[in-house]
Image (cartoon, rainbow, N blue to C red; front, side):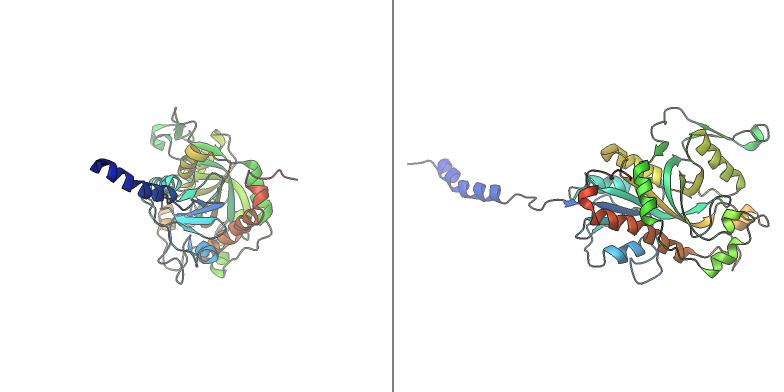
Length: 337
């Protein structure tokens, strides 16, 4: 007569076969084609004042369910076309921590994904204006270096020196073919503007500041400091020139850090940074930097709602093209004509 151990073993065979036929993770991970990372939202994702994410959400995910990811600040949303997105958080630490958690989640397959890092920003009045939308050609980390006070050097001497050992993470040149595609696909998008922004621009003498919003390219400067004033703006341009990057066009707080995270796992060939200017990085000639930072009622720039709408309009022209022509894009950006 068989022992009780043998009987139990024989009885377990059907259960083992059933377990083999029904794996714990039966569903395949979501194949992400484009991922849109915004940094903050104001209130809800829809139905109120729009922050950086709302226009994207209303375009792509109103019928989608949130996917919770451990370690990410907010859920990820995906539609049936492989367009996913999330609000990552403001600043280098929060945004990059969220991005790493999402990239490591087994819910998603990012092996062929294009990354759109999007949000609002500042711009120097000598090169941009309120409502501009800018595709980054370079991402530069503003913080990785040594700084000292103006009183400690001769007038006009630099106040910044790069710190050795950070060469690979303080500067990213983005894929020029992908950036050129982004410009071509979005160059005919009509940008919104506001009467308040048009009036505010006229306080600046710079031709670029007084002009209408446009789509442009240049260096995005990533810093955890909300730097303001002509001196720090000039320093940002100095750093861009020191590193051999294009002109400094955008001041923001996340893109270089998020790109470092993406680079560790997937490289940077499919990364785009898209920013809209909602403020100048310095005051006009008749106000101090402090007055610029803390404006009196009625002295703000205006144009915020129009700029966040512009960002989504410009970016979605590229997202929609990639998704609609996925066989040509899945292995990388097609060659330019």
